[in-house]
Image (cartoon, rainbow, N blue to C red; front, side, top):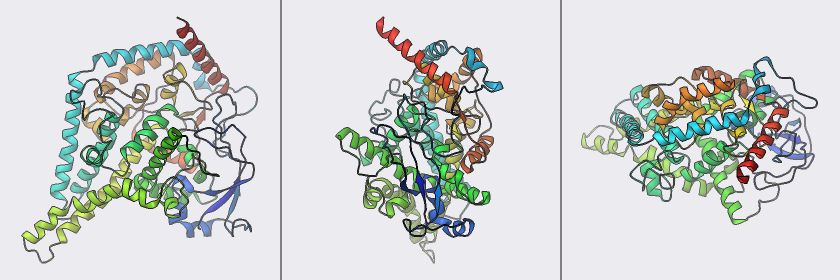
Length: 510
């Protein structure tokens, strides 16, 4: 099976709709990085690198023993955490680091009040300028599509590859991302399209016209807009890099092999991992709504990948459903139907090989796919990973003081300020501002960044802004296990949650 098995010991917690409690000594299947790339592509390297031990219960595969903790109980002081290197401090009072002294005097309610007031000001200022800015970004994205399409059939070339890659990237990270969050719901005059409840969802035609990618839009909305945004840097955050990569971080293989795995993941993560796993989240949401129980021995937090689907280890949907509903439309239309005009052109010009132009276009599309995966990794995965980013043990109420603080402490901004720079970053360079107010327009994020920085400075809250390539380095170090994220001091995390509850009760009593 080319897999590694391990035994896991968990802290028993009440099962809920998103987590199942594992019994002590449960035997699970190891899936590296959540996408099982090592087992798929580097099994021979692993076989040579590991000191194999055999067990009759695992049919000769390697055993690695460590502790796995998973908890969703907000009253549990133990963290929902996987892996040794990702463990928070335990026992006794935690000492604040030199750069954390601000926490002692931090006023969570005052900070929340300032952030709420600023959000209301920004929302009130939105209007036609934001709509025109959206249309401008759409034109830029479409221009990339046109350049790529017109140059992809004659020779394999970087102009076509970069243009096609940027088209795919910008259509997702800028246009679909902000529209699906509701950034234009209240200000765009065309409510039938530029609205979170209409854009790319509801029919195949909408998906084709608005946002055709590997991910199914409805599935991405559940995984990203709901779970990631409101569980940021908690164990239930499906995009928590340190937790998702704990197997790679702890794998007893050479560091060079870990870097190779990360490189392969960068070039393939959207179709191999992200599309099937977001579809799993949609299925889970549907099951919860229907009151349908999970099958026995299924952990809903486990990632679903192409590998697990093909092996029949996925209880949520079949391989045929995944291909027919999620992956197939993009694969067929983008890579085989889109370049068909070049096949017609080849016959019209009576070329010796009429299909030559067509296959050249397909090659450029494939290379652009690899590049857009890498581009997406650089701009997306790096937003919340690094040894200067915090993790949290317990959940918090959306838009509470703790919520606002966490969006700043677990997010990072990149270089910003001009439409060109922001376009190349997919407008993901305003990650702090976007997580504070997910349903604002792209133009509002440009306006808000210096204002948010000023609020953070006034309250002593660290505001991290750094070059995106430095963040790539920090993210990769987290992925391979050479560094770890910080844990927010438990004493103050609990204190802020108590203040949130007190503030809410006082507001309700008014």
